[in-house]
Amino acid sequence: MARQEYLHGFDRKEQMRLLHQARFLEPYVYRGVDLEFKETLLEVGCGVGAQTEILCRRFPDLKITGVDRSDAQLAVARKILKAKLKHGQVTLREQDAQQLKLAKKDYDAAFLCWLLEHVPDPVAVLKGVRKHLRKGATIYCSEVFNQTLFLEPYSPAYLKYWFEFNDLQCSINGHPFIGAQLGHLLKEAGFVNIQTEIRPFHFDSREPEKRATFTEYFFDILLSAEDSLLASGRVDKKTIAEMKREVEVVKKAKDAVFFYAFVRATATAP
Ligand SMILES: C[S@@+](CC[C@H](N)C(=O)[O-])C[C@H]1O[C@@H](n2cnc3c(N)ncnc32)[C@H](O)[C@@H]1O
Image (cartoon, rainbow, N blue to C red; front, top):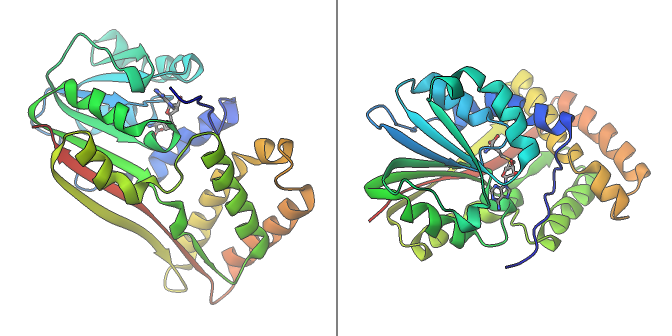
C-alpha cells in the first residue's frame, strides 16, 4: 500500500481550524443530507469530531461510529463528544480507512467529508465502507475540487502558492482534485444510483461581506500547509508576504470575485 502523509498536520491550530470549518460550511455541506429515519451511521475520517458534533445535533436519534487513523485527532474528538460517548450515541475507532474492519456490517448510512483527498487508495476506502452498509444504505461524500479556484483581481503569488499546495498533496499520494472523480470512484467501489453535484461558492460585489469572509476562510486552508511548503522549499517567505497582500485586495476590491466549488456525491449500497 502507498505511503501516506497528512498535508495539514495535527497541531492544535489545525484541529481548531477543522472545528471552525465544519460549522462555517455547515449550510453547504448538509444541504440534502437526510438521515432523519436512519438508526446507524458510519462516519469515516471523523477527525476531531467536528462533523460528528453537527450530525449529533441535527439527527439526535442517530447512533454514530466515527473512524479515524489519527490518535491525536481522536483525542480531541473524545473531549468534544464526551457526553455523546458516555450516552452511547457515538463510538470512536482508531483505524486506517483503507482497511476498515468493524463488527457491524449493516449501517444505514455513511458520511465521508474531506477524507478521500488524503488517502492513497480511495477505492479501497469506498469498498470497505460498502461492505459495512446494509443493502439500500446511502453514502454521502463531500470532497474538494481544487482546480476550480478563481480569484479576481488576478493574484499570481496566491496562484503560485496554490499550485505548490496541490502539487505537494499529489506528491504525498493525496488527491486535490478528487471531487471530479467521485462518480467514477463510487462506481469502481460497486455503489449504484450515483449522483454528483457541484456546489459552488461564488461571491462578488452583490455580497461583499460574504466574499471577504470566504476569502479569509479559504486563506486559512492555504496557510494550514505553510510550514510544509516552506520546509520543502516550494514557496518562500516573500511569496507568502505577497500572497497576504493579494488576499487583502480580494477581500476589499470593489470588483473582486471569489469562486470555489466542491463536489457532493451520494450513492446507494447494492
Ligand atoms: C481534513 S480532515 C477532515 C475531518 C472531518 N471529516 C471534518 O470534516 O472535520 C481529514 C481526516 O482524515 C483522517 N485520515 C486521513 N487519512 C486517513 C486514513 N487512511 N484512514 C482514516 N482516517 C484518515 C485524518 O486523520 C483527518 O482527521
